[in-house]
Image 1: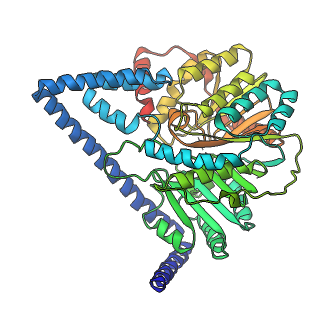
Image 2 (image 1 turned 90 degrees about the vertical axis):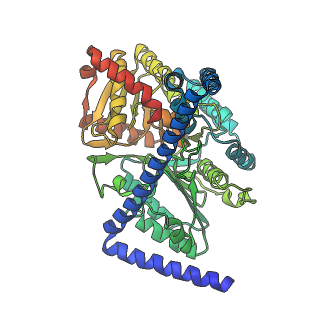
Image 3 (image 1 turned 180 degrees about the vertical axis):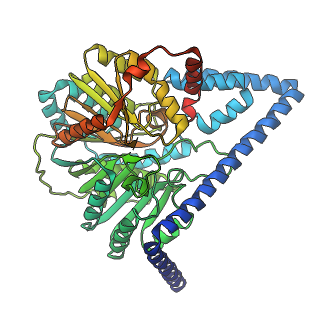
Length: 543
């Protein structure tokens, strides 16, 4: 049996190497074929899923007309669901659209809500996350000395950091060096250099991985390290990577010794857990170096293709104590996505005592994550905290702007306190409907004094916030409903780190090449425009 397995692995490895050679001859052709196959798969699943919803809706509707008792029962069910949504501990902007859908089109509204509107994950998935968290948390020990040191320096910032540590269990670290990348290509190049230095294990967790030119050198290093005996693991999201890789990707990776897992595999059959995606972007090497930011591993991010103009993105590398959190986040997801018991019985091997002395002194680093598993809106609260503690300015950059009334109010209050509040959004959209929804928020924000800029060179995919040149966040959190309420996200909060100056300089460069549209959207809107924007706001939670 073992011999047959070895022969099979040898054949698959040879096939993978042959494909690798072919890809070097014509890498774009291979990427295009993989992408086309994957797009066809996702499109087929989407069509099949919505056909199921449509026919199920038609059957329920016809049956409700046929049976008065069924119609009455369905009306009661609609009222119960609406009351449940109303009583949910979340913001009104996310509740109202679903209440309207269910009240006006109860059959299809309920089915659509089950598919796309329910918060959180299944009880089984929740239990798996809780189980692995109970084993990981002992390695993420609170750092009261660091918080006390920050409290002496800045008590306002310390209070926000203490909140994240208490309710998210994410410690505040010192002894951590930070490097900022103002372009995804620079970040990926540095990742490859660090991957080549790996001696123990490599973890990659990305929303989107494209089996193409950008991934090829990474794959070669991963295969080499796996052959050397290192533990090499990759997690990708099935929706995020669906347009980039085909069904044979995992087999090819495993033939090279690279272990792969898929987050929330998409099925053509109706399911109610499709809405939560793994939007994180994490690389961990030996528990000593970690990368995160807004970019995925795909040709879009390295400018090999530019369908939306120049693709602007950013990221950070952290080296030292702060990598513990990124390691923990990966291990949490790795063990939770598989529907069985935890297979990492000894987690200590992934949390080595790395004796590292940071070059930079005086900086504080707090990697954090957000999850739909609880009602703690950690990501949104981090952004709100940036606005609340700012003393001079607070600048944001986001690819999508679909925010709640609560966050809008925080923007307004910050401006009224005299804070220079600015938001950069793309000048060229990647999704026209979402772009229209993004622009629907301009008027309200501009009238309250928030300055709006559109990134003229192309699509700005970076997700960052900086305040007063003292603190900043870099990560995966967009200013939209999906990132703030539905997805698994991550980021890094920085205070008094040298990299913050680089982030500030990058913001200034973006302002220079962006077009300020504040005055354009400050004016009074016509009635048809207001109506159309209200309609867009209603469907905002769906996009």
